[in-house]
Structure formats: structure tokens, C-alpha cells
Image 1 (tube, rainbow, N blue to C red):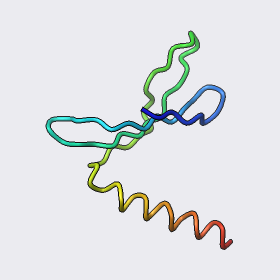
Image 2: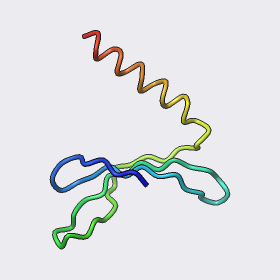
Image 3: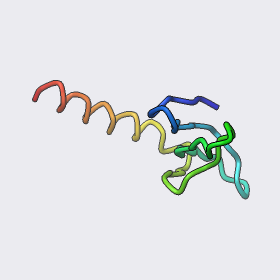
Length: 69
């Protein structure tokens, strides 16, 4: 699992999981519930790991557009 700090109360967790025999990438926002424990939020996405190269490509295209602006 990889965690990226989003702000002081939230982090984006990215992990590879198996679910019902499917190899998935799960990206979800987790939040501090006020007691110091993190809980999964509603914001998130899961997709088949085989899509990862296409997702990387799409993110790269978005980064290039931002740099060009």
C-alpha cells in the first residue's frame, strides 16, 4: 500500500488487491475520524490492474497538457 497525503486530515491510499479472483488497483481517500484512526471514505475508484498502463498514459497526457498551459 502506498499513501499520499492529501491534506491534514486525509490521504490517498493506492493498493493492489485481489477481489473475487480479479487483480485490482484500488485508489481511495481515507480520513482521520478524529480519534487518530483512518477510515475509508466514499471517494475512490477500483479498476483491473491490466488497465494500469492505459491509466499511466492518460495521466501522462494530462500532465503534458498542464505543463503546456
